[in-house]
Amino acid sequence: MAESAHARQIKKKVMADFSSNMEEVRKRIILGDFCVRNVHTTDFPGNYPGYDDAWDMQKFQKTFRVDIAELTENLMEFDMVGIDAAIANAFRRILLAEVPTMAIERVLIYNNTSIIQDEVLAQRLGLIPIKADPFLFEYRSIDKQSTEEEVSEIDTIQLCLKIKCYRNTRASKDSSDPQELYLNNKVYSRDIKWVPIGNQADVFADSSLGPVHDDILIALLRPGQELDIVMHCVKGIGKDHAKFSPVATASYRLLPEITLLDAVQGEKAERLKRCFPQGVIELGDVNGSKVAKVVNSRLDTCSREVLRHDDLKNVVKLGRVRDHFIFSVESTGILPPNVLVTECIKVLMAKCQRFLHELDSTFTE
Image 1: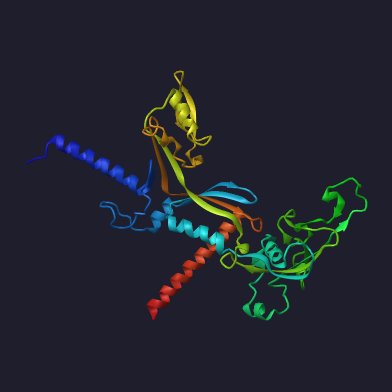
Image 2 (image 1 turned 135 degrees about the vertical axis):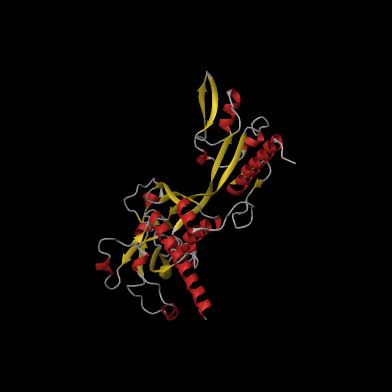
């Protein structure tokens, strides 16, 4: 029996709704009242009928892009679009743990009469970021670490901290301010001095090696107390110790997506605006009435505050784009954030090459 026009129309509508819903499941994460839907990665071959989700290099090159939103001396925010969450997380973990830096590893305390114990003081010194290009140095060999041989200019930076607190003879008799009563009562990172080894004075003549920041408080002293310390900085990665991590923070989040399903006007529009961070929703004037419109959903923190309002939750659809990642990389100051991202990509490429080499060697055996 021939299919009626009405039946064909219904079938067409059902297929369109199914296709639309399926596209949402594949490409969007939906934020609901009490749950978050579509959180699992589903774009693999054979998961959805009619969709060819096999990975293709040409398709990836066409859809993948990187957009830099902000770049300052110590902060970089950029969008990475067209990748899976596993790849995005790989970048984050490499930034945290596998991009090398220089940090204080050995602390030789010759004199410490402050109230801070030697172990605590050594730990504080180790966490001070050191301004030095790690790619100009080599990793210190295990033999040198075990036998404690003399330091070398190719793998070590030597720093010293020698300071003593004195009473200020010119201070007012009525003063009770330690800053006025004592000299050198506060030990800052600026008091750490670089001691060149070998030809380092010539190699690094244009850049003075030392702490990134000069105002890091290390200890408090009183008259007669002093510090006499020698420090050795070596090359390492955050996987060995957090002090080698080159970033203060390295995080990513999915791009928020806010869709208004119906026009929101008047007092409801004002309440809707207050449900989101500043700049997400703005009010426009349409025929003398305030109408809400989405201006910049990127600023949304996905707090879902709007879902607490019964008369607003049905006119707003909250989601996140599954393959659009907003990265935020904050450097400790050792290396610029754009250099950190570049080195991160190099580390990941080296891992991929090593994996391919292992596969080739396995198949050839």
